[in-house]
Image (cartoon, rainbow, N blue to C red):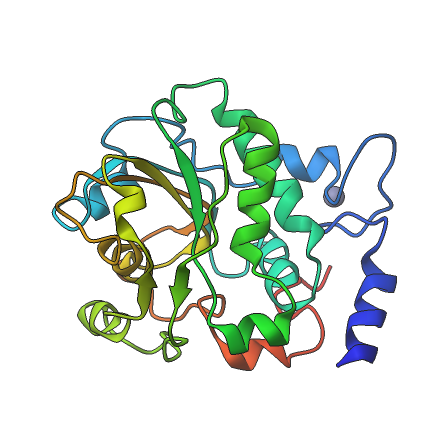
Length: 256
Ligand SMILES: [Zn+2]
């Protein structure tokens, strides 16, 4: 494993995560051209947008947004893949900052009290060495100043690989996997839940419910990426898929 981390750092440092060209000037992790060409969702802070609607009836949701869309075979996959499976931890902070800078121009953060990243189960976090969603949260904190709360936000178990489960099965699969200590800390608060990619709303819904709903805790959601159709995509290699962690190479990189 150590050799793997070492070689990853060597091959990616100083190069754009998407096109692999050397970075220049004040570019960090992604070049200006690739950054301008990401498949942006443009959800911004728009009230009632498609992502927000997926939470209606499940979570007391205030706002929801996501930076770019997740489509099979797109080069933007490399961002998720390397953030999550190639140990490029710095990508999290970089993209957290990018998201926050864009949304700071809008009313997205209005009323939000704190940030909570979707936690990993201890065994998984131990293997990866970091929580990619928490890295995004740190980047958001650096721009907004909002505190990131991690203590007492517990994932009891990793959910089973979700990839082949249908929508309702996904929700059942992640029920009751989170535990929030001293939930009274969050009564009457507006919490921003942060995740790397939303492919179904199951995990975020389960986390929100763990906050002891009904005590006027409300939520907004911000993710780096979202599936084009988050309820009906049959295969998601990035949603907690253990197999991907051992995979070498850029499996979604186009040939040319
Ligand atoms: Zn590039």
